[in-house]
Length: 482
Image (cartoon, rainbow, N blue to C red; front, top):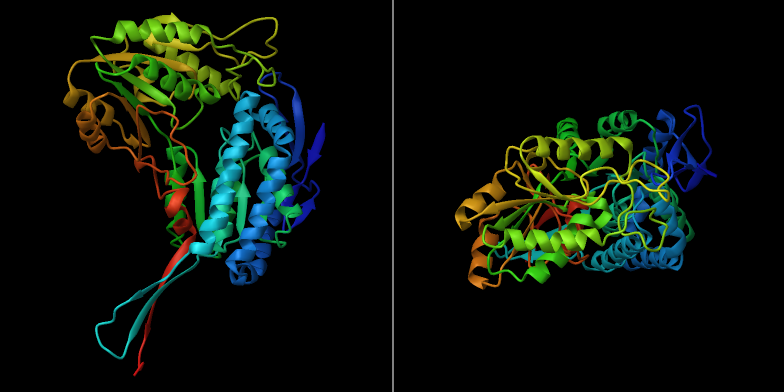
């Protein structure tokens, strides 16, 4: 068992007066590592170190910053097997998915290494002949990333790549359940030659002290958060005191609409990929599956067969396709949602309870579950289940199902399946979601901007808009040219 210190100002800091906290493997209940819990002085020092490094990092030519980012990505890809095992041990997802997450995250580092070289300004025609108008982009300043436990590598790398490429130092606070991946990322950037102070990873058993200090410090100019809508709203309120730029990727309640002309082979393959990736613990996971009444029985039969072939087990086992949920509270929530649905008239076609077996060493596994006879009164339709539960809901009318899909305060992602291009255009334009897949549930791409509508967030991560979350636009008017 390893003990990790915090990475602050380019140095590894041993545990202080706040002691350590344990990181537990959800598949076995075993302690994977002990991690130093940052003190208030550690948190303040990370800001001081970022401030000291900020000017030189912002002034470094973009191509030199790009070289450092690329070296870090290469180091991580050279260790992908080791990093994937660490990720699986702390979070639970199958090893193949962990490897995919690291490769995808490194793709963001490579993408932003190039985008940072293209942070172009603009010359605008002036209103009079003796003036010139120029708009330039400049780094916003010290940035903070607060990341969740479900994708501990990619969620940090997507934010970190954009911030560093824009010329901003970043302080990261990973989720207390899964801090090891972030600390290993810090190790890779340290070896790549990132200047001291430009990146710090601050771990804390209790996040509130970190948030209080960060949000109260006027030197922190940008905060990028991925997590619950409730916490996102709190950060917005706290950020108002110093008018910080707050970027939020929050909860989802993703609908899928399966029209009567859909290719059911595609529907099953894509829906399974979305619903059971990371055990359903993704913000873009299919949560509500609306199926035209003429095909719902056939789709239920096909999905039941596909789900029966999934293998529940420790993510380190090569045959496992569904690992454990991350903590006991997560399993309890899934149980409540399934019990509520059954009490209100739903039927279980597959699964429906905690998984058990001689090979399972913890009680945090839940069987892939298929529910039919579901309606909007049930919790699975009103709350984000964040687990391996697929509820099927019948519909008959296009306008009605679009209204039902939109009938949520969330607007992160949605999916629809049809062979009618006119319908596809009509429905995608009517759906109130930031990311929509048409006959596609695996739409993640480093070159595309990702984010939500309504209470699912503010701003966009990745793609051609990703740098803007960490940059300011400066308008310069130059007179007396002639």
